[in-house]
Image (cartoon, rainbow, N blue to C red; front, side, top):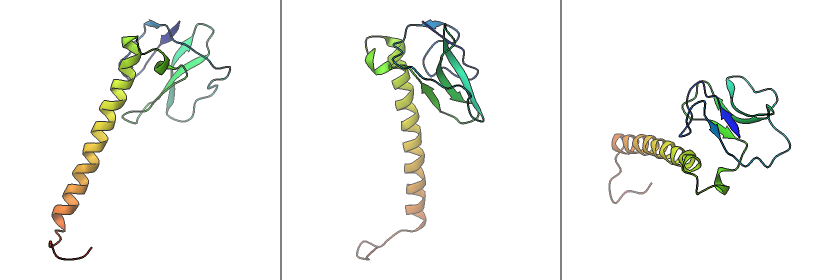
Length: 111
């Protein structure tokens, strides 16, 4: 069992609730870097989840949610990832569209 202790978000997992994960590692984060918070630990205090304190979406998990597709909570992690990827894609497309509209190219001209 892990306890998720998010300061910001949990990306689909419930805050401060126990979750069954499948930790398969014998190493973990000891000292997180600048602006990185430990947000999930095993009962033996091994770090299982980290997130960035200022960036909009940056989550790292040590367990393997892809091995637990039957667990709705684990699927929520992937759903959050897809949602964030869509937002980024729309931002990129918006910038590309604005640039294209600002510099139209005639149909017969070469790029």
